[in-house]
Amino acid sequence: MNLDLLKELVAFQRYGTLSSTAEHLMITQPTITRGMRRLEDELGVSLFDRRVSNHIKLNETGVYAATEAAKLLKAERDFTERVLNYHHLNHEIVIGSVAPGPVILLENSEIPSPAKVKINFQNVFPEKVADNLKNLKEKLIFTNQEIMTDEIESVYLGVEYLGVEIGKSNPLSKKTSVTFDDLAGMSFLVVQDTGP
Image (cartoon, rainbow, N blue to C red; front, side, top):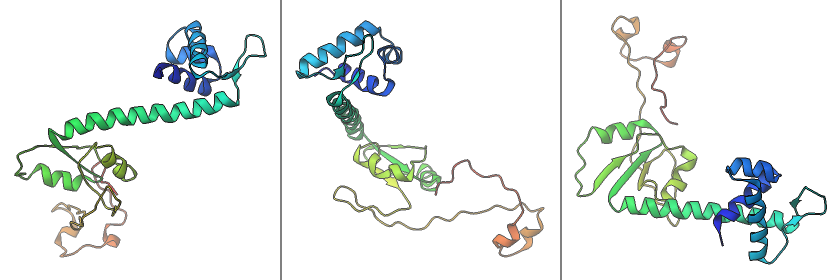
């Protein structure tokens, strides 16, 4: 099955016309028309309702085929990503984190390992942790959520604390402890992404 034809079918479902599909895919409209006919021939079914002159639309089978094609194309992208990530992970250990603290700690420490260690300095979105591990994007991710599945195991490492540095000219610097009430109404410079 030609994946380009499936991409054309999915694009047609999204954009609704041959001209919009052709424009989106940056190919000619006749190429799309020939491709859709070739796809119908390969499948042995009609995917379009052609009863209205100069206008086609997906029939029920076409809608189903486009939905299944989208799933297949996603699976193909995931397959490619996993294979490439697997290859990279055989040559390096990629470490990620949902917050900058663990990455800063790793960056400033000596990691005794025969393997090449690569640190992903861009925070991983918490909702993407499991997907990134399954797709082999990172081999280890520091997160604030426990994940226990057949494929992923979490290990509790500790607690991260966020500190506030107060300049010596600030009257609060004389205190031995500071509360949130003491800090109320003050402005701070904050790292752009501190994580969860």
